[in-house]
Length: 219
Image (cartoon, rainbow, N blue to C red; front, side, top):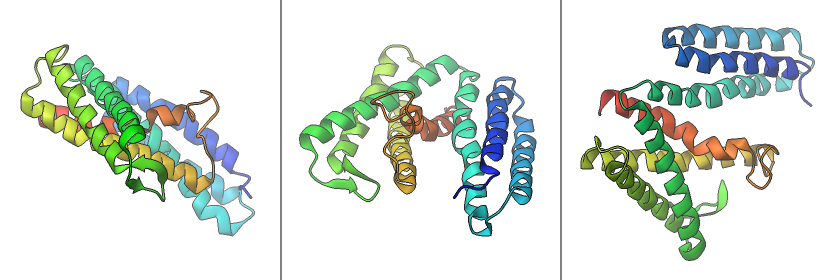
């Protein structure tokens, strides 16, 4: 049974989470620790004073706070990436790496998949599909270099694809892990047939921070 404070705490997290992209976009990154601290303390106080079952307090608190970290914090790195030199190209490169990898993984897995990749979490994914997805990300990186992002070197193309591609696939697996943990098939119903909005973002959530730090410190 859910704690009576879950709805209140969820509203608190949604409110603080909506402020995170604003801090990112206004280049107020230094204030993010303060926001996360305030959110954590507020949620903790909500559960402290709105509890009727001690056995569910800890998991409910952890689940609620992780919602703030998982989506707004990770996705906010897209905003930071946009503000970098060649920011627009970096964002489009990220989307191309993820989408080309997802597409290649799906079709290669459907046609050639034999060995299960991680059946406990996602029984339909295969090793062959994962390799195909990596090849798709590599192709996407070189397409970017030859079209809208000529500043990328061959080394950059290889490194970003080999680094971001697998991270995107792991983001997909992690979201499958969450859904199976909660015993649901889809993360939402807003986009029928697509498993929910989170299914469209899961790869980007893992890939966005990695690409941002690569672009900022290694490019």
